[in-house]
Every structure is written in structure tokens, then in C-alpha cells.
Image (cartoon, rainbow, N blue to C red):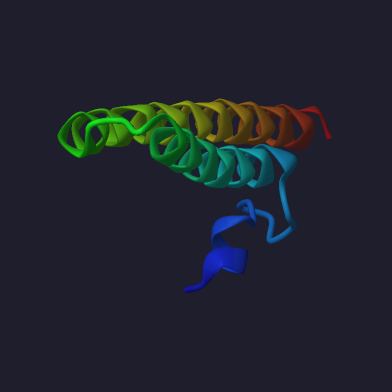
Length: 83
């Protein structure tokens, strides 16, 4: 299982929600590390705070993907019931 599998939804196609979440996580990691180095932040404080923000991004992405997947599944069920 690779990164491309993570970016695919239940139907096997790539999904924008998952792609944006992955991109947001990478941007967060790069910018927070770069700003901490530039500002000369305390390494201990940075190491304590950085995972919290990353977990928030991951949680928001997972929540958004879950809501979208659930809505899609409900729509398919309604469509099958209508036929």
C-alpha cells in the first residue's frame, strides 16, 4: 500500500479531498519547520507543538473524507432503491 492508494477513494479514483489533505500536511510540515529554524525557536517547544497541528490536519482530512464517502454511499443506495 503506497501513497497513491491513500489518495484513492472507495471507487478507486483519486479524490480531491484526500489530495488536498495530503498537500496541506506536507505544506504544514515544511513551513512550520522552516519558520522554526528561521525564528530560532526552542527545539523542545517546537517538538511538543508540531505534532498537535499535524494531528489536527490529519483529523480534519479524515473527517472530511468520511463525510464525503458516507454521502456518496447514501446517494448510491437511494439511486439503487429508486430503480
